[in-house]
Image (cartoon, rainbow, N blue to C red; front, top):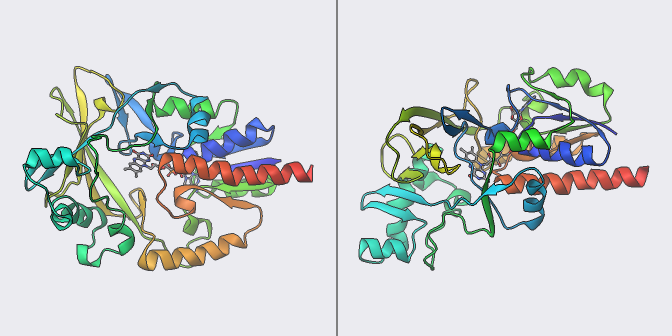
Length: 336
Ligand SMILES: Cc1cc2nc3c(=O)[nH]c(=O)nc-3n(C[C@H](O)[C@H](O)[C@H](O)COP(=O)(O)OP(=O)(O)OC[C@H]3O[C@@H](n4cnc5c(N)ncnc54)[C@H](O)[C@@H]3O)c2cc1C
């Protein structure tokens, strides 16, 4: 089977590897000048910089962990997050540890006000009262035990040689065309049996029903000889950025000079990246209409964050690709 994969993020890379392992003829087309999508990192001075925001790997899915472990060893990284709040700096999620620091227990309402309201309003550009239940419901109000880790999954770690190297190994032996015009892959359509599309679903259909809404980010980087006291500091207040982080933590590096980044949420437009789908309200209604078009589209599999218009952690993107590409492989075995 000849398969053209549009996009080389973790979804496209997983699909490419699974198909190539089974002897299929795969080619990958990528608009950016590098592979790895938003998980991409690059060395700058003595620091590994997460170009599109910090990426910390975590999963409870053993199959996903074993699959990625074929291409990387892991550094044992323990992720903690601190929030700058009206009551000072506290560890989040809220737990008995935070309670001890504050000297008293907070009610759910107080936790919401302290940690989530300002942060969420900045993140989504929507007043708290108007934020959909789907977003408010995601907010983890409290943790009962004293585990100070941000993620509690069984498998956690950072790729020993960075994400860029991990993706390079996943794509070994597979032709990859980077720096392509977003429409260029269409010229190859008739030369292949199948397309796996991981770009924006509305762009696949020429935005014929309208553009799907996204939230974007602006990153403000600075070099610094002084380290931040924590890997990530969330700004749960009216400052315009949502968080600040020190990249040297993420790969357990100890450089003379680190890179510190402030993250500012903003509306998505033609000049920035679509980081967060907004699958609620009008966004969800429009996506449902594109999903119907996708269901009727023969020979194309829609995969990943942009094509399924959903927030996927890395492990979820890999798991989704394993299931959906697994189904194609099964079908091709039956047809052979
Ligand atoms: C700020 C931020 C922080 C995150 N932190 C974490 C974290 O700590 N842990 C975690 O598990 N997950 C995290 N995630 C989620 C993670 O980024 C996603 O799981 C992952 O990027 C999904 O991969 P993907 O391949 O589906 O999409 P993407 O990474 O977006 O890759 C899609 C690729 O397709 C390319 N493309 C699109 N259209 C075309 C076209 N027409 N032609 C050619 N190429 C095209 C794009 O250039 C891109 O490279 C974070 C996400 C963000 C935004």
